[in-house]
Image (cartoon, rainbow, N blue to C red; front, side, top):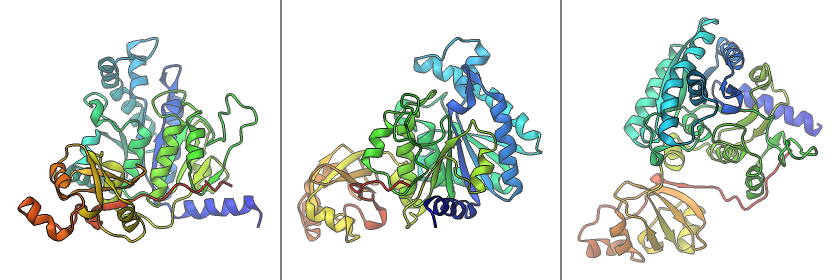
Length: 391
C-alpha cells in the first residue's frame, strides 16, 4: 500500500467513527473586509445540516461577534482597547446569531447561543451543567453555537482564544473529533505566504517542539489564534486521545470532503489511550494556581510508575493556593510533566516537603490524606522530547 493510500485509509477510519464533532470556525473564515462573511455562514449551515441528516451531531464554536459589531457600527477597524472590544462584541453577537439562525432555518434547523467564560468551566458543577444543557440541545437536534462571553470576561478568566475554547468543548462533550476551520489549507512546514516552497503536511502522528516553533512563524489573518494556537490545541486534543484536523473553511464542501475521507487539511492523530472526562477537565480546563517541584525519584514514580505525589518527593512550592486547587508539577529541570488537585494548601505543603507520610500528623497536627496529590486527581502529560512523525 502506498503512503497516500495508507493516509486516506487512516482518514476514512477516523471519520467513520465520528458521531459527534466540534467544528471551530475562525475569524479568518467568517470575516470579510472587517465584516461578517454571510456567504460562508450560509454554506456552513448547509454543510452542517447535511451532516446532521446523516446522524452526526455537530457543535459549533464560532468567532465573528466583533466583526459583526464593527459592521453594525460602521467602524473602519476593530477597536484596540478592552472596553470598546467588549462593547462591539455585545453589539455584534446578536447580529452573528441572527445570521446563523436565518442560515440554518433554510434547512429546517434551529440554533442555540451559549456564551461561556473560563470560570464557567473551571467550576465543576457549572461544567457539568453546561454539559447537560448541550446534551439536551443535541438530543433536540438543535445546533449549539458557542462563543466566549466577551462582554463580561476579565483577563484572568479568558480562554485565551477560541482554539482553546474549542478544545475545552471537545473534552466537555466527549466529541470524537475537533475540526478547526481556518483561512489556510492546513499546517505547513513554513509560512506559505512568504515561502513558495512551503509544504503542506497532511498527517501528523506526533507533535514535537520543532513543529511548535515552526507554527509560531505562521500568523493568523484575523482574531487572536494564529497557527501557534492551533498547534497547542492539537497537542491538548491528541494527548487526550482525540484526533483534530486543521482545514480551510473557505473551501466549498470542506466538511463533506473530510467526512468522505478525502485528502484535505492536516489530520493530527491521537495517542491510543483516551483520557477520561474528569482527567481532561483537570489537565486542560482548570487554570493552575501554583507549582510543585519534585525530585527525580518522585518524577519517575509519577511518570512511569503511576504513583501519587507524596510529601517526601517535594523540593519546592510556588504560589499561594488552597485545598483542591489545580497545580502544575515540574521536575528538577523545571519541565512541567503533570497537573493535579492538591489535598493540602500551599503553606502546609511547604511544611511537609521531604517528610514521610507517617510524619504528616506530627508536623501539621492533623492528617486528612497521605498524599499531597492522589493518583486519581493527577494527570501525567506525555513526554514530547521525541521527534514528530509526519506523513
